[in-house]
Amino acid sequence: MLWLVSVQAQAELMITISEGVESAIPVAVVPFKETGVVPGGDRLSDILRDDLTLSGEFNTLAPAKMLSLPSRGDDVFYRDWRLLGQRYLVVGEVTQQGDRLNARFEVFDVASQQRILGETAGAPVASARSLAHYISDKVYEAITGVPGAFSTRLAYVTLQSNNGQLLYKLQVSDVDGKRARVRLESPEPILSPAWSPDARKLAYVSFETGKPVVYIHELASGQRTAIADFPGLNSAPAWSADGRSLLLTLSKDGNAEIYKMDIASRSLTRLTNHWSIDTEGSWSADGRGFFFTSDRSGGPQIYHMENERAEPRRVTFGSRYNARPRPSDDGRYVYYVHQREGAFHIARTHLETGEETVLTRTQLDESPSVSPNGRMLIYATKQGGRSVLTVITSEGGSSYTLPASEGDVREPAWSPIVR
Image (tube, rainbow, N blue to C red):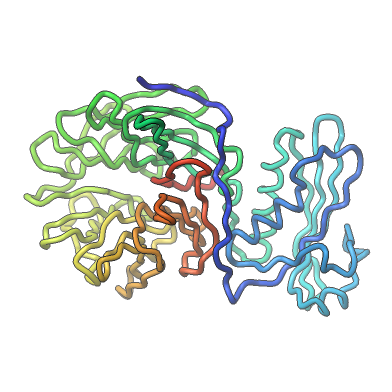
């Protein structure tokens, strides 16, 4: 039996901050002044402070340690913030007008005493968290020069066992695990969720019919379409940048190979042709080529084809097992699962130099997904016998863990930034 649902999840992911980064930037987010009857619950400035902390790139100052609480630039005494060792300062004010929240916020460089960002933004009261994440994105970009990814979402699969009965749930949440919604429930496995470029659809593999089938799921309407239901294996969907096609792994012709499917016409183009297993295709940043996993060299390794007719080029050499490639959007790196001394880690290879870097220290890591701004990486791992999600900086600095309050959580996928 299958359940299509779109309701607030009973149990959101929890946040456990595991380790900070020594080079984190000191930033003070002053509690925003509130004018009018601002609803209780999470405050915008609290969410902003948490977002910056969770990125792993900032060391935020606790409000209890602040010497003053300015709400605008005219009230800032830079000497106070220099004494506290702060490099940046964020101040603001929140006003409720009817059913809307309006926020004014500013960012200051403490050393130069210059304002580097000043903006106003608004949203319905019910979307206060969305407004806060938007502010976080703007503050992050003002300081780092890189777009923030706090307004994006995570897709993942949770697994629970109740009296021996397994239940898989496909869920979507904010990047901090809040506002989780269950999109699909099934007693059969759900695998490999992948976001469309407009973040309105998910492609994934479901075993609900007793075999692997690739579906496209429209999140707003809940409408689902079986897009690949061929004999044998149907797996590993990956969207093209224009949203018109999918990379798929199919074994309909006898061997697992990479195919491209035009979604509108359902026409297929076979992209690999080898006696080995070719799987887990993922488009290159340029949209012309793709990476994939193949055991044609005797064990799983990452290969790259510059275009659909090019000869495959082996990318990884650092161990006998490298799989599940996920390229960064800037085209500099490919991330993957890497086995070393019996443990599975997340590693990356610099595509120009070939330099390999092992990023994680946990032992059973899988399913890496890169944030759309390239600054964070989420993956599934084991912790205390349970599967959890962990987010680190793309340089390997530890940031935070997202365990489910019940059961296991796995198969994470980070949504794109939609402008």
